[in-house]
Amino acid sequence: MREDADASAVSRVQRGDRAAFAELYDRYARLVRCLCFDGIRNLNDSNDLCQEVFLKAFRSIGELRDANRFANWLTGITRNAIRDWHRRHDGSPMQLDEPVPDSEHRDSETDFAELRDAIGALPEQERLALHLFYLDEEPVTVARQVLGLSQSGFYKLLDRARRQVAEKMKATQEMRDE
Image 1: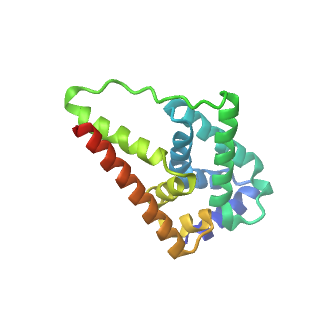
Image 2: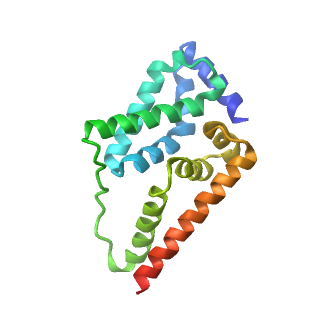
């Protein structure tokens, strides 16, 4: 189970085993990177922010009292880092510098941008549910823990997020077809 593996790795890190932190990084880097990008919409800055999150986590892991809650704790650090980034940058999110797509790739690039925007427009809980579910190896277990929901509560939140994204994508497609 993920929680047991996290707790074991956290315990080893707290005893000075740096390699155990690498396990945690490998397990959660994709999620943290996605949350950072979702929060600031700039690929280079989000990669830098991801590194800042893990550095802060490494430096303060001794303060983590419940090793089973590592995913929740790390998500909290990520949220705070995003808020701090916005304060440092006058609260204005930077836009992703996207290359102009080739004509043959225009549809997939446009679809991706529209999907990214639809997910980005969701409330934080729904965005986090989607990220956790689709980026995690044990999606429901960790997602429930991070969001503090029952299994059925998580599935309701995930369903609501999916429906909202589908509605936004449909509306965007209809506007594009007009």
